[in-house]
Image 1 (cartoon, rainbow, N blue to C red):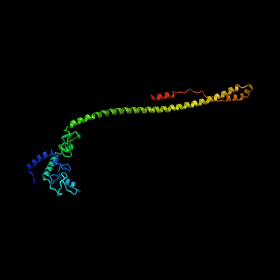
Image 2 (cartoon, one colour):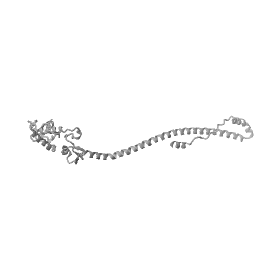
Image 3 (cartoon, rainbow, N blue to C red):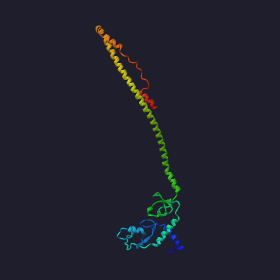
Length: 267
């Protein structure tokens, strides 16, 4: 049956009225606008496919809402509701925006409110739905929301700036310490080389002193002997002294001390 222009006008008015009562337009099973709706004997309506899926595998046919038992698995089509839902979809297709993010993906309605409880934009149908029952709303104002977000972002930006500055200082200090460590490492190696040479020279001096001391002590003991004994040992003592090699004159340690060298490397 073809609707007249006047009938369509009345349906258009009905759409505006019904859009404010989403439960009357939505299938109780899928919670979306009816698609090919059927009506049961208890007067409840459902999408045909939703109802069949609900009954699939069940032995008893009953209304999903009121649990009334039904006799037929093929309830009649709700023509009035079907026409109304088709008209609603046609009207929504006429207002599909070029920017879909401005419209509700569930109901294809423009976002008009901001839910402060869920912190998200919602359309009129969402606002009146059970999912947002008792929530606090305010009109959509993207500029105000951006201002609020920038205000919340400012402390994070300041903290990031502070942490970045501290990070740069830490990196500079780490680089300086690395250079100092390398210098100290080189200085320590050099000082240990000097210490090794010094200990080697000290050991050489100790040996020379011991040899000279023993030779002098032995010769002085011979000098203290009685003349007869002295004359007997004189030859060997004199020969020993004449052929005894004299060590080179020692040189005083050159350069800074061990600790002074480390202090020089720390500068």
